[in-house]
Each structure stands twice: as structure tokens, then as C-alpha cells.
Image 1 (tube, rainbow, N blue to C red):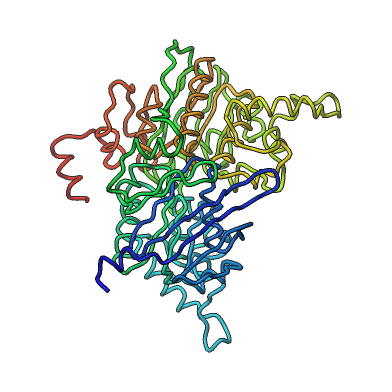
Image 2 (spheres, helix red, strand yellow):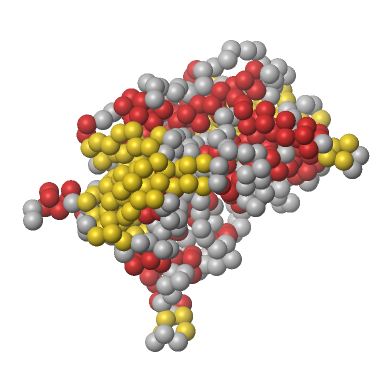
Length: 521
């Protein structure tokens, strides 16, 4: 068989897949092919059924109807172990790691390296893990507890875990959502190596520029049905968007022009010592006016999320002043600062933003129950009306307010976290990677809400590693690098080159800077 024929060979097919959950039908007769030695892109809005389809292929879920074929033969994937035996691995969008275990232990969990099958060979595991981490240019020691890693570093561990299985089919569900630009480049290089080895990659992402860049074949899902499937060379971004949402475009939020109010938030000389010396937040000062949206851009390790933790009073080692509406905040508790009018949308919604066993309504009203309580009595009807209003504003796709939040897609869970923060009636909203895991349509809806809230006088400070996002949405841009603010500019004065250069090198681009950047890459 010729090389091109092998490359186009279909190694796995899903035929007529239907998946019914209580109150909703996630998939409706889906046909999907996975090609050897290719990046098989799968796109669709949140709730379109992408993750459900991938869970069926990975053995996590069973189809209500339909079949899976490998090598032309029907197979039953009764669980992830069964899928692994058939050479299928998955990098989940929601991290599945044990924080109290080391990197090496997480990579080889369930497949531990042993000495004669008697005890675990920790040295062998660490050595194998180190080779995988070096392949991904990941600097942490394999003996480091996963709980000590930032979320982007944990994402690298998830990818290393799947690479360790020598899978023939690798599903990557939003693998770059928490990665820096440099880490994305490393991942793409690894994907190129895997393709050359004949590995089939199924790649899910909401970043369309990524899909066009690395994809070989694209399949689009909308409302549980396939709306398009073509070689990537035959499509462009407008075609993808039309297939996803049924119209030519869903633009980012357009600016609602309004005057800014007085200074609503001031952070002065904020510092946070780093373990081992230096500062994670290094003498940072910034301000925010009522009605203003300020975007903080920077790469992983820049100190952006740590700054938000300092503002919220989450870290006892932080020093500096936080002033809200002219009054210095003495409270060090998160509850106290929420009560004063600061709300935080955390980067990791699963670990910090939601209680998975509770309902949509219970999660959304959790931080604002006092608004629906008289004495010891909770007005449940008023609570549900309040929640329903924010569900409508944020266009959350949910069958019922009583449905468990764990039944929602990743993007809809993110909207629940945003709604929970907004229901506290904040004066200042801190948003850490607010669009992580959100598709084009949902992103536009969230951004429109942010603009509307700003026009009503809410001050919004948001962190993002998405350059397009910070350029489109911000009234003012702050750039951080190595814990310090390296640049601050009005959106009208900003350029992508200037913002990126400040995030990498700490100064604005010049001819010398451009030469240095070329050397770095």
C-alpha cells in the first residue's frame, strides 16, 4: 500500500451514534471517521455534542444507538481500559489528575512500572516521566506534586500521560486552553511527530486559527448533528463559522461607548513572595475606573492569577493596599471582599468555581443567598427567578435549573460560574481567563454581557492569554511579565507586536527586539 493511501486510511469509524440523557439528546445519528497519520479536527459550539462523541470513542460513555468500527470490525468499548487496549487515549478538557500525587505517579497511574510485579519501581517511573517531560520541554521535576503546579503545567502532565500509552488514536479535547503561546508551539511540534509515526489525532478546539493551521480534515457538529465534513484545504474560517452557527459570523462584542466614572479600584505596591526567593507578584500597582474594562495580558508565570488572588485576600503572604470606591479594604477574607463588592471568576472552574454534585440553581445562587433570604427562610421561587434571569442573559443551554451542573458542557459550566459572580452585584469583577473552553458564539455572548455591565458602571479587570481577546475587548491593556507590569496602554495605542514583545521581553519592540525574538524562536 502506498504512503498516501496509508495516511488516508480510516482507522476508526462511528456510525449512527445517538446519545440520550434525561431531558436532552446530545447526539442524533452521528457518522464520524478518524484517519491515520492526520489531525482530525472536530468543532462545534458548546452543547453541540463534541465531548459526548469523544467520550463514546474513549469508552467513557456508551452510545444509546449506533456502533464503533475499527479495521472494519465492530468493537465494544466498555471503559477507558478497554479503549486503551484498542490503542485509544484521551486528553480531557477537564483535568483528571490527583493533586496529592507526583507528576510521575499521575502519568503512570493504573500502569505502574514494577519490579517483577511485586512493588512499584519509582526510579524507573521518574526516569520515564522525565523523558516525556523533556519531549514536551517541561521543566518541573517528575517528583513534584501535581497540586503545586499551575493549571497550564497540569495540562502538560495530562498530555504526557497519554503520550506514555503509545496510543494509535489520541483524542485532544481543548489541549491548548491553558497553555502559553510557547507551550502551544511545543505541542504542535509533538503532534507533527505523532502524525509522522502514523498516529491519528482527534483535535477539539475553539481557536479557529489553530484548526486551520494544524488540521488535515474537519468535521463540524451543531445541535448533535454533523453539518459539514471536508479536507481542511477546502475550507476557510467563514465556512467553519457558518457550519457551526448557521450564519456568517458571530463577532466579538462591539464596544458600547460610554464615559468612565471615578476610580473604583486601586492596587498599590502589591507583592507576593515566591517559594525559593523572588516575587510571584513584584510591586504591582494599577487602577480601574467604573465602567472600564482593563485586560491583563501575559504568558504563564507572569503573575496574573496570583495578582487576582492577592486582590481577593486569598494569600496571607501578600502585602500591598487595595482600595475599593475610595475605601481601603482591611478585610483579608474572601467572603469579606465579596461583601464589599469584589467578585472573582477563577481560572479553574472545576476545582474552584463549581460544586459538581449540586444543581445549576444551587451553584449559581451560592454566593448571593442573602439576597433571597428573610430571617432563616429562603425564598426558593425568588431564587429560581433570579437564577433564570442570568441563565437567559448568558444563554446557558440547560434542560432544567434543577439539573446537576456536572451534566452541562464545559462552556455552559463556565457561564454558570460567571453568572454566580454577577449575582453578588459586584462593583468590580475580576475574570481569570473568562473564555477558557468557550466557543465562538458563547464567547460573543459573554463579551456582550461584559460590555453591557461596564456601560452600567461595573469595573472589569480580566486576565487572558488570548491576544485577539485582549485587543478586541479591552479599553486599556496592562502587560505583565515575571511578576511585574511591563507595559500599560490605551487600546487605541496598542498593537499586537507591542503587546507580545512586552510579555516576552519586558520592553516595547524595536529593531533590536525583533532580532532578539527571532533568535529566541
